[in-house]
Image (cartoon, rainbow, N blue to C red):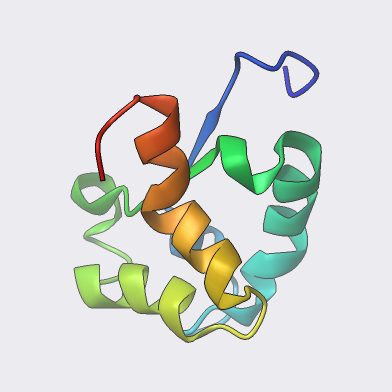
Length: 92
């Protein structure tokens, strides 16, 4: 699906896939594959909070992406709102 420019992907519930405790350092290898396939400009972050509540709290879902050194500030801004604004043609 990544080959089609009009397809974007929501990155949610990543912490639920981790085999390690917060801040879930093992999620970045698999996520990097998605980021490379789609490009960050077509990836939108989400918590998947309602389904993930049994495994992590909301703060952990957000902070894992905020505190990681796996994303630059620009990449983080794109993933956590910039791409969504562009994809849905929203005014920031």
